[in-house]
Length: 383
Image 1 (cartoon, helix red, strand yellow):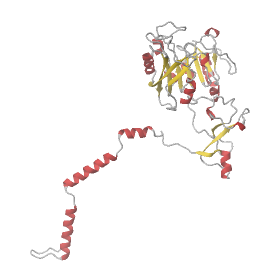
Image 2: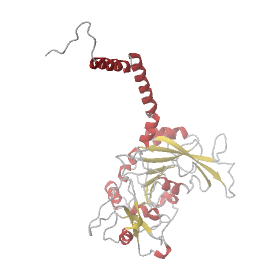
Image 3: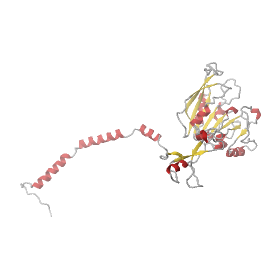
Image 4: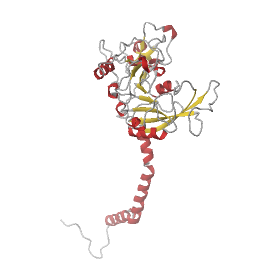
């Protein structure tokens, strides 16, 4: 049926006038086209103002944990045994726990070691040490919290020094494996008379350093003339220079040496160490300074402060020193150079790889002791 149509000249009914008023109110309440455009522009401006900038987004992404958060809370009871006793339960809580390392030489009355599992003398330190407890609560079953990386020290490597007498220019570097830290003090050709042999610039460029690291830090000592060459070598080997250390030389009276034995134009009272980074290593940042003040000793010998510094920056990783001498050998380090006393390797896997590459070279047993200094004439040079 057709709706009722109002006849011409007939007054609208009460209900019809209400509908008309509602329609008029609706039309008046609607935004005009200009008002709609202004409102849309205002909303876009508010959205832009509240949206994070590219810099804020980049900073936030930089500090995000890769693969999502994997943080776990430590139990305040420390060990699972103490946790079970505190809870009065057969099972400990689901938080992370530690396990005491009690050896025959450990004296529990002395308390905890300040360095815990990073103690260099763990095999002889009498204090109590700790390690993460990765055992399941079911007897006889254990699991590993994380797969050990290739550049981390084994327990054997961590407690013993290792070295190889060799010609670094031709040594098969690939048998050594991966390292978290490399330090090198090359015999740069500085066009001066020196008490040791030097290497040409091309020999330095062609060293097979890239095979030693995928993710790690390289500390490269350079002289005045070799600063630019050192930067070039870092770039050729796949590193980005990120820092530079300075060693300020002092005498026995702790005064700066002003009559250096090197330098063409000025007496050199300092030495530089370039720091290069490769890949994405896990390192501790901003815990040390870029200036070392230490006494001068034998020719070309660098300050001992470098070794604990590098251990703090990259704890427990495998570390390699190139162009080392016997006074450079340290626990947790492998030293290469032509002034070392033979070959001493304590890690079984490394010994096997070395014997496969050099079957005719004698490898000293791990328990063989050596003096601190020796000349290269006492051991055959491995080439």
